Structures are given as structure tokens and as C-alpha cells.
Image 1 (cartoon, helix red, strand yellow):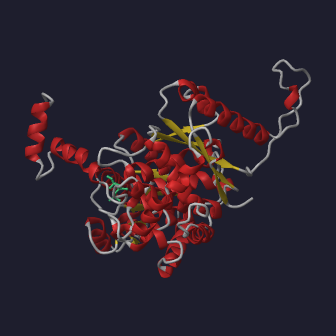
Image 2 (tube, helix red, strand yellow):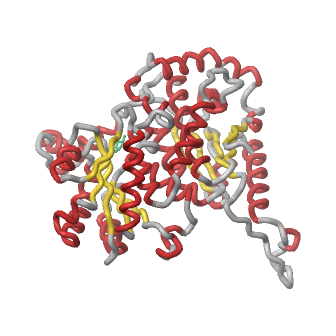
Image 3 (cartoon, protein in one colour):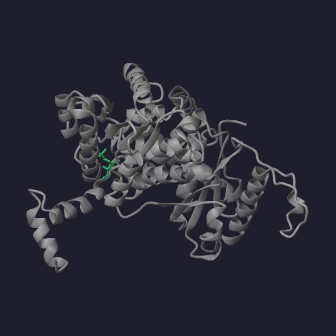
Length: 450
Ligand SMILES: O=P(O)(O)OC[C@H]1O[C@](O)(CO)[C@@H](O)[C@@H]1O
């Protein structure tokens, strides 16, 4: 099958055949805003050409650094939050063994890539230190701003750990900083300490940065093929250039989700039938939520993992409030095919499935769910993907990035800023007593009777 195909055939009950064509003028305008830079946030569109127009020298340095880390470390601790972590995290899950973290070093062959700085949980940090134990490790600290609280705190902890284990010079040789090309606290410190640095390009926002060093270094360290990842993305870049809705499936997806949104389907669930795509949905949730949720509007991005969640959320999806739409990422070819075994007796009534591939059962479940949810009033779209390999993942990443950007313009917002995330940070700095935020802190403490 093709690397990716978008299937909207289950939308018939919800979208009249003429509606897609009626979106064409708006889609053409959104495409022009995106590609000609006439839309809001135009300075942050460099991800659009990233699969082909990237720094080849840096790409070679990423591979060299990955080789060094593979040679001298059993663990790579990747420190970052939001767009500075989700892409690498979802890619490592998508591309490796379902029990990647539980595999022995010999089976995994490459360093274990673990993540920190994506919460403020002290137990998580302590447990991660425990899991590293005596093993050799390196740190990749990733932050565009260089001042984000969660990764900054984690970096202090793991830098200290490195220095205790290897001394200051030894630690400095094991720290890799991915940050702004020239500005920011992290860049300044990296230059002063001699850490190897990689760049988050100016024109690429965090949630669009997985195909920069942000994602590429950890993904390469995990042993995945980043050439293939970029090749898949490059194929998608070439495929999704035509604004004609009959030709461009990424734009179709953008148009349909906006058609549905305007009919009251305000929450979109990204769904999978493969547990190792759970983090794919988390990555997509930031991409969609931070891009589109502003000016008091936007589709709320949520997710569900099937068939697991059919036994928890399934009831709500089938019969709850009718504001849901679903987008399934459906895998065509699993990495392994296991069959339902034969048994001597049939107490579980599974005789009729003996010898059948479990993936075939999975696909019948998907087909059954699409039919049931459609009947229940939930529109379902499907993104069919060929394989769980690097090429397909690169393609899929680009599909979602370009679709969400077009979708944002269709809804009349700036898809590339995120002003809303500052509100909690300002309050938190006030409560923490950060210099410059004292007044806000005092005011808040009064409000919450602290
Ligand atoms: O890379 P940084 O600057 O640490 O930011 C991490 C994340 O935090 C945000 O700025 C939101 O707080 C995201 O947009 C970004 O992906």
C-alpha cells in the first residue's frame, strides 16, 4: 500500500458531498497564507521545508554525536518538555520494541533513551536516577528558551550527577545542548562550558521541531535511521503541495475537521490500535492544541487507545455527548504476526478464530468500531499508514504538521504562537518567589488565602 492514505468514506452521514468543494476557496486562501507567508505567525514556517532544506553539516554532526553516545553510554537522558520532548518520545516508542525499556542492553543493542524534565515530580527524578544506577550515561538538554522551569530543574540534577561521576571535564564531554542558535541562557552556558550544541532553528516552533536536532539526536541514539525519517518527510513535503482538495489528502483532513468543528464536533480523538502509538497521540495533542486552541475557539484534541479504551471510554464515545469526532491512525502491516492458537477444548468460545492472525482480528475490531460509532453519531476519519518504520513516521509527521497549519488558518487563528501558556508560568513564578514576580505572588496568595 501507499505510505499513507486518508480515508473519509465513513463521513457520509455527517458531511454532504458538496461540502468539501465548498471549502476549496478557503483552503486555497489558507494555502497561500502558509506558503506565501501572508498569514499570521509567518516567521515560524521553516518546518515546511525542513525535510529537504536542512543544515546537512549539522545532520552529520548529529550522527557523529549519536555514534559517540552509543559508544560511551548505556543511557541517554533527554531533558525537555512540550515540543522539546514529545517528538523524540513518540518516535522512540513508534520505532522500537513494545517493551523497549524492559529489553536487556544486549537485545536493545543501543542506549536506552529516557526522558526527564517533562514534569515537576520529584519521585520521577529519583526513580530515574535509581534506574540509571551505575550505568554510563549522557545528557541531551533541549530547550529553545533555555529558561523553562521543568527542564532547567532536571538539568541541574542530572548535570550534578554527571559531575559527581565523571568530574567537571568528563561531564562537559557528555552534555549535548539543543537550543537557540545564538540567544538564551542555555546557549550562553553551553558555549562557556564547551558542550556540543545543536540548533533549534529560529523559524521552527517547539511543536514543529521533531525533524530538527530536537528529535533527530535522541532518535538517532536509539538506533533508528534518521535518513529514512527525513526521506519519508521529504516525500510528504513533495506530495502535499497542491492546494486542490481533490488531490491533497492532508488538506482534506484539515478541511473535514473544520467542516465537522463548525457543526458542533468540537473534540477530536486521535486513536490507534497499537499501544506503541500512545505517545504519537500525545505529540499530536500538543501540535493541534497549542496551534489551534486560541481566541476562545479551536478543536479540543484528545486521544484514545484501542481496543483498550473501548472497555473504558467506549461507552461515552458510543452514547455520550455528541460533540466528538475521531481520527484513527490505522497500521496496515504490523511488525509481527501472531496467530490465535488452537486449544484442546473451547471454554472461551474462540474455536472460530483459531489459526487467524491477531492483526486480522484487530482490523475487524477497527471496522466494527467505525460502523458502531458512525451509527452512534460520531464521525470517523482514518489515516492509514503502511508500516511502523522511519520512512512512514517521517511522512506521517509531515502530514499532521501541514494539516494542522492549514486547519489553523481555516479557523482564522495564528497557528504558530502560544501566548496562553504564559499565564500559569507567571502565576507559578509569583508563588515560587522568582525575582520580578513578587507582586503577582502577593496578589495570588491573597486570592487563594495562602
Ligand atoms: O523549548 P522550551 O523553550 O523549553 O519550551 C518547551 C515548550 O514550552 C512551550 O513554550 C510552552 O510552555 C512550548 O511551546 C514548548 O514546546
